[in-house]
Image (cartoon, rainbow, N blue to C red):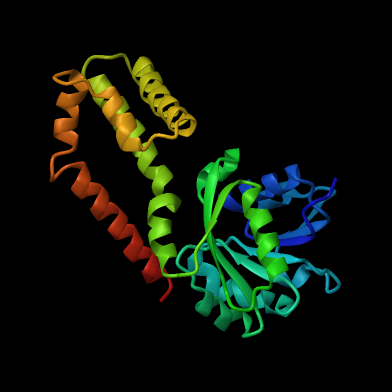
Length: 268
């Protein structure tokens, strides 16, 4: 059963492919994608035609949404070619740092634009996206973008677009922080004499299991942390190091602030 109307996907990188897979699971109407990379052609199928450039998309193709999934640095060179769909399709942008106003300047004032920030767990349908709708977006277009984003995870909406820079720093970049934790746990385990293969298993499964426990519990993360921390025990000793004022509390704040600043720089 088809529940996703015709779309035009611009950019078939990791996030574009993840979203495409989710749409296909929900039944994707005959759609199109634009990406010059040779590997993008492998995504073609009965529900998707893949073109190397915008000019090759048939003139009669009328997508309900144009999903902008190219790198933000390519926006100025790439996005204007799709301005011909303004006034009929909604533009769903998942480009970090690219503002609704900036995209409107590239697509024209009639463009209906939703700016969103999903994250890479979308590849396993466990992502979270935060979105903000521009003033030209209709209720029907808002609902369509909700459907497109929800096909790969949870969705939240904000009215203040400025929040999306911090959202990018927290949830957009956040999976990399978690993967770094796994790397560091594995390295520390090896330094304590644990064989590398076992160190890798311990680090990975600890984070995977902790995430599953977090998902299954209504308790705040702080309460779950306290549940693992016995007074005078090993966890308490470790947390005394990690929670020192100059350790994780400062490092995480600085990391998120740095990523937020970079998101704002990408809009310039």
